[in-house]
Length: 358
Ligand SMILES: *Cc1c(COP(=O)(O)O)cnc(C)c1O
Image 1 (cartoon, rainbow, N blue to C red):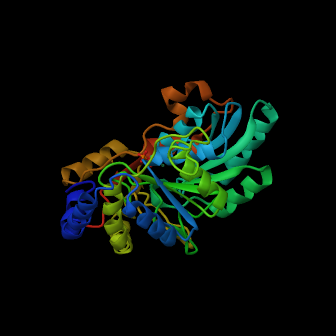
Image 2 (tube, rainbow, N blue to C red):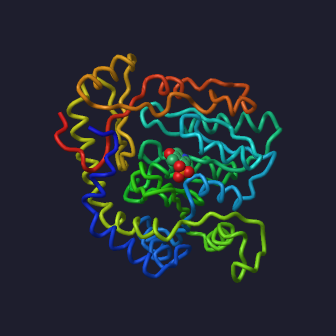
Image 3 (cartoon, rainbow, N blue to C red):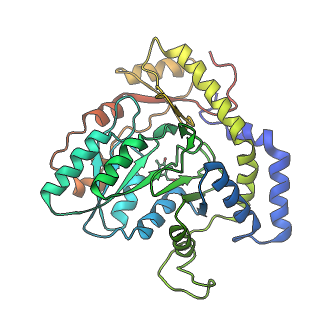
């Protein structure tokens, strides 16, 4: 059994994907070809936003958002401590200060109460300018956006949704990628919607944001790419990757259903032995990971291994425990829930082509 079986998906889609790739080889527009714009339209429609702007990867998608919001040294950007490194990395890369926030024990996502506590603490210290929040849809479950947006509005912070894992999830039928001021996703092969290389996208309803992001991703272009009106980066999605994603997006709703069937089966099998992930009322998860909790994680993982079932730990180290973030350690460094999660979570194989789960 494989943890994520990308070959099974390719087998299923081979004829369609090969045909799409060959079409790109025939027209030869490898950079910003028609498939890129077709994909952006379809992504925006799926997520239910006005604009989807593709880019080179999910980390760049976040970095482009830092550029868009003018995040700079002296700014505080609040992000969960229990997440993938990139979420906080882009903040430090912009010269700003990541301020870590503890997690909610049930959802693994940013705890709105601790967020407010960290904001108040930052205000009382008086060294940083309150700038933005990056919330993460960890393991596929959207963060608590109704509450997070309330806190963001109360303190005048911008809200960014990092939906790298959440693409396909929803809250009361509102899709992940549509929350906050701007949202990002990743098409890294192992994500719920992955391509065959690196890829990413940004979503927004704000026309001005969309124009700026389209400029930033191509060297700050103005009316054309040799008219440069601001400093930008080179962060485009390859046309071939867009072609692959068009075919994958077409079957994505069916894949989501299959992922939910796997999750249901796991729940039946493991609810009595482990702490299984719970999806709050009104929420759906894209099940980027199916993550169990157990105090004796190593022993539990060994049991699965003996049955031929691979497991992985996402994530054993919180951001505040990372060497790279040593300089950003907060005074009140009590991330009890996140640390407990980091020492007890492990994930089971999850993909839409899993069969014979027992
Ligand atoms: C994967 C991931 C990213 C980064 O995406 P890349 O495409 O690998 O750059 C950012 N945030 C989270 C939460 C992720 O899981």
